[in-house]
Image 1 (cartoon, helix red, strand yellow):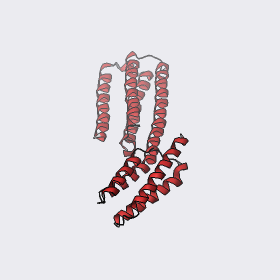
Image 2 (tube, rainbow, N blue to C red):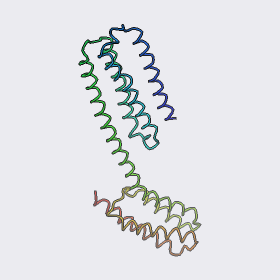
Image 3 (tube, rainbow, N blue to C red):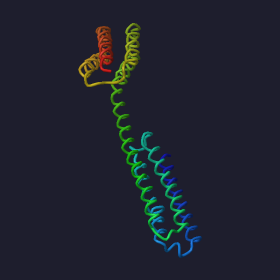
Image 4 (cartoon, rainbow, N blue to C red):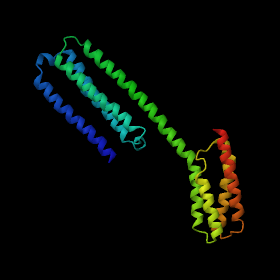
Amino acid sequence: MKNKGILVSLISQLIVYGVANLFLFLLLSPEKIALASFWVSWSFTFPFCLITTILITLYSLKLENQIISKLPLILAIQYSAVIIYLIAGLILMFCGPNSSKPAWLTESVITAIYFILILYALVSSNYISKSIKYTKGKVFYIRSLQTEIDNCISMVSDKAIAQSLMALSEKIRFSDPMSNDSLKQREETIQNLINEIVTNITNETLVTVPSLISKVSIEIDARNNLCKTLK
């Protein structure tokens, strides 16, 4: 659906360009069309804008770029630039100055601002998307632990152990979601203990499960306290 919207935008721009060119070449006199200022303005307004739009469209169609931190800002800049180029170009083409300098100056300023904004948009959106991906990777640890414990609860018939597992799941759920390199060793210990719990419950050997749950609970508390000191 998103790809269709992007393609519709491109097709809409082509239609607008076609109609605009039809009016231009019908309404303007041959003398104005022959001016260098006309062709400078026309080149930026139509071919240049069309090329940049196609490039942005190809960029937008890539699945990895279709995220909230990238497309809205980049597309907003692109289509704002198209409108500005169109307005400035039509004014210059209809006014038809004899010298091409006004056209070159106007189009150069618009292009410079456009490139700077696109550059900042690409850099900032890439930074934000990488930050989001990094954060998701860090919080995955806690979510995966809770999922493993939750899966074990339905496998246990002993009410006391099931309640202990539910309490542990809640403790994990409300733990600090952010990981850190300083926590690596302690988190590996927690993961190993939970792996033991999963293995014992799967093999229906529940004797050591309560003590393992207690150890995990202690390790989780220690980890969360260490998280606080790292902030």
